[in-house]
Length: 445
Image 1 (spheres, one colour):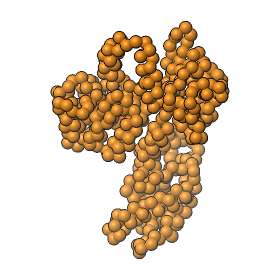
Image 2 (cartoon, rainbow, N blue to C red):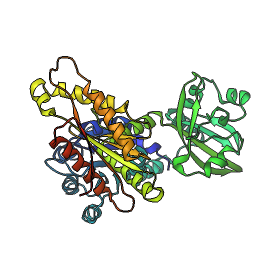
Image 3 (spheres, rainbow, N blue to C red):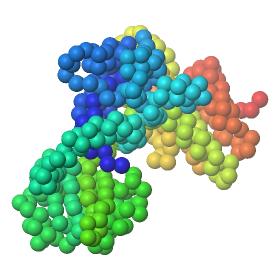
Image 4 (cartoon, rainbow, N blue to C red):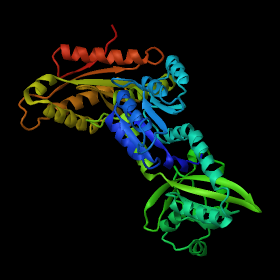
């Protein structure tokens, strides 16, 4: 889908999580004309009225992007109120919900699409395009009808001006030979004219970088090859004239004028990729300790249980809790408590193998999943970890730092995931109840 039209779209973006709102707005601003941010439905409704129901406002909002669960007024309530003013405004929902009642209400409100959290920016942009395109096309049709009387030469000059104003690199091919390029393309390779490029290069794909994640081929007929791929896989990595790597999404349009022609657009998504990686990291890691979060460990635990039920190569788990951690917070403050959590997390990371999964389970509780590990080996690892932490003594803290550890082994085709977690929790409770600073293995009663 050609998304160049998005640079003309004005969006109201409503999201109560400030870091998600700021990060998403920053990257969407590269594709959209303007973004108005709101932290809840009530503020979103007020901003919509300001821009769309006030004479001579600086611009009109074309599309709403909103979360569901927010204080003061949720997203669906806001959309319902906005539709009292303008029923034609399209809306896109960002949500973690999937129940039937939500879908029914969203359909009744003519929501044009929804994107699940954590957000995948490519999915969000595609959904925005689908939702905003009808209104944009209607506006463009009116513009084109006004331009029908222009002379051919004027149309040609206008097209050249449009191409050169695009942030995307654009190439026009006659069959597989480059016939034209826009200003952005020439600047990327520090060229004066497209003839300079043709004289020194066989094909643009000679600049593609060979990496597993990106499209690459040495064949001159690279356009036919990349067109066989799904849209999301049409991504290339190119090194520019300054020897910088850039990542581009490739869009191709075909037209016929005596022979087949292609218009190829290269959209720079380097920052988009980096942003996507950052969102993925935030969705799977604890912000303080940088360990996996509870949700991520649950996902990996489900995978490992399926594998253990099939192959039975041993699967163990350990859970530990910092003894008397409340005393540290009460005596020295939560800032010092956070330092202890970070230091113990680093000790934990240096005490386990690359194949193990360590997570902050909650508060001062930590969990480690140990695939292909017997309960005896888990006991040894747990004892070593307990001893390392026992010797840890941060500056300006006079209280001892120790941990209590519970361990359990998974019984294939007998235990469930809930059983497994419950068993290790019971073992941890026994360790704390019987003196702390010890390792206790779960024993079936």
